[in-house]
Image (cartoon, rainbow, N blue to C red; front, side, top):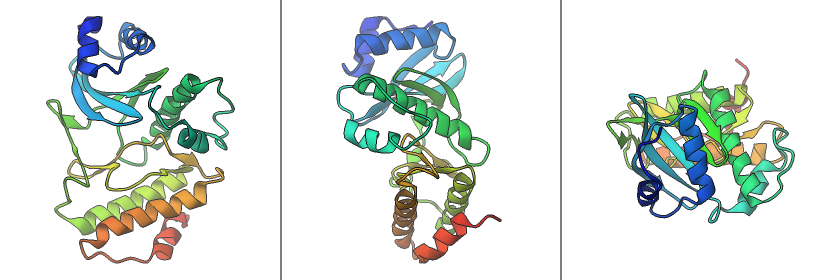
Length: 234
């Protein structure tokens, strides 16, 4: 069971947990998917990420915020995704958003380095913690690679591997790639299937974002050539 009382959980969360989220956390603890919440790793408009424990394993617990999320943007990425046909209200939309990231992580596990998904329920996603002793790996934005060319090649390969698995990240940039000795892809809730109406636009945006970041290290590649590389079957 989670060790914290309801009061302690609210203190850790800085007041963002509603009763429904607290109940979801307790349900996950009963299923042995969370044992303890320790500290906040990252905060944002649409989600907070917490460091936790599952037995002796460090985990990341991502809680999607029902009240402050950008529902119009979420709907744009969910509509056209055949895995999610409808939702009754904003809360149900957030639940689908959490499931979407879980499904994308599960689909990409075998081909790219990304957090291993452990479980999802309602607006709570439990996954592998990228870091050590409660200290999370830094984003590429805050931790430039020692070997930019090697990192860039790896990220290109990841984009190609994701494409072959039928997924486009949709928000790939130095903000959503961790530097943990190698690139680690995170924040896959926006990821869309190849038949999504926005797939082409999002793929080009991902490539453009990556090229813009690595340009500061003197790496110059043509957007169309990278696009061809990603799409090429072999």
